[in-house]
Image (cartoon, rainbow, N blue to C red; front, top):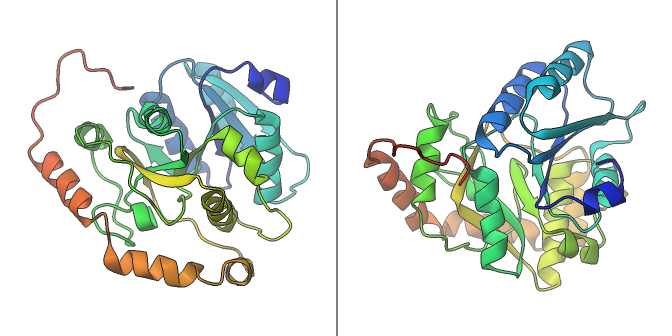
Length: 285
């Protein structure tokens, strides 16, 4: 999975986890990923020289026991998270890539439902699931960070019952996002020379994709929890403002108007009135 040729042979998306420095969060992320994702799914743990000895031991132990098709690469010297992710994307070729934050906790079925978003609308270039810390895609309150839900399996069942409307987001959000490979390559990949954080580079990529006629959509049937929001590095927001002068106003207008308010209420209602677990349920559907 470390070459374009290997990625081209992959059927379905590649899950990329940029390995971070928080060992405890990484351990929890990998456990949730294993439980919530179909066996055999290709997963690339991409380490930009971030993990220490304990983090490496966590990765090594997880790869030895997971049912996912997992690979791990580590740079000897860090090149920065945006440049590193751009290298990963280039190696993935035209394959669709789901980038999962290393402190995220995917709920069952998250990936298959993101893939279903792409199948439902060929104009969708990025699909972002709900999250307790998802900014524009946050649930139950827009733009707020809520605690990680106690029962991700239960919230996954509620989300599965949501109508798949795929409403527009102002940009994809960095807790988890599925990116269409063909659209990403057409847009020119990530701008590692202008942005230091994946948070800002993803916004920039989203806006370039929208300018080319693609859509940045919410996958309203999927949920991925996160302990906190991603954020920009020094200088990133100035760079965004210089290239996209109306971005901050557009985002503020979206947060104030909250066009997804009815969907948030509906998801809460479905969760509240959820029935018992179905026998022989498919967690990955």
